[in-house]
Length: 306
Image (cartoon, rainbow, N blue to C red; front, side):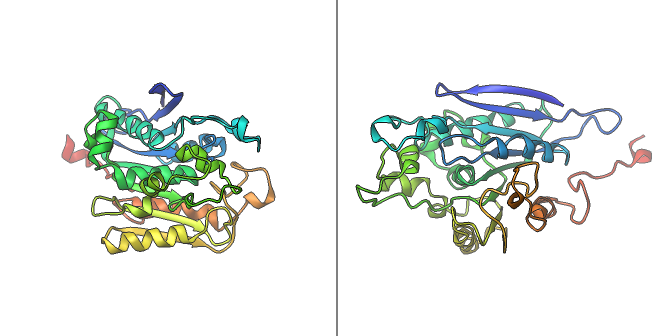
């Protein structure tokens, strides 16, 4: 494996790239699929629980992995309920994280030959707020305004698939009463009471189109932080446009289960034998060769090759 960390822009964002390395014992010409992971954290921070352990899980399945730490103020900056102590101009305001994500993904195609990237499988994924961000790229990648802000051709950061885990696909951050401010609204729009125009732009459910890639979506019915209707309504929008999708709403489980076991949480409630199957369900959906482990690869006919 080859590991690279790259800074993105001037706001403190960075990306971690974990690259498989082709080997003559297997196949020097192999191209590897890439999964791009956007950790959640309410746009206050990027959660460690949705970072390295998820990366290791997919590395073991033969993926390149890219983890994008879009710029945030850090969870400590939002600890106070005193308005005077909260960030004045958060670095996480839309579309900053989207620009950083697109820039990190573009690096994959810009260097696809050097790092053996399969350009037909660049999957953008995310959890919770990170799922919102992944959904933004999935639904907005083709927009001219984004191409201008990123400064790279949109085809470079176009995702081929998306995986959205308990994703906030329809933030409701507008129309807040003055006595009911929202820190998430501040982190995403720059206003404690939301900004209708920004919220409309950053909600993926508003932008599903024929340009949206196939999506795998999972959620839990008992999620009280992000309602499961986010997943269901998004799937219905995909269906309207005949976009391939698979959606799983597991009956039990709290918000933020990640891998569904104690690798990504210390509490008993982090263990859920039903939910941890989502990785296998996702892989089965994604593989071009169904019902086979490692279904991206075809065997080499040694006689024919010689």
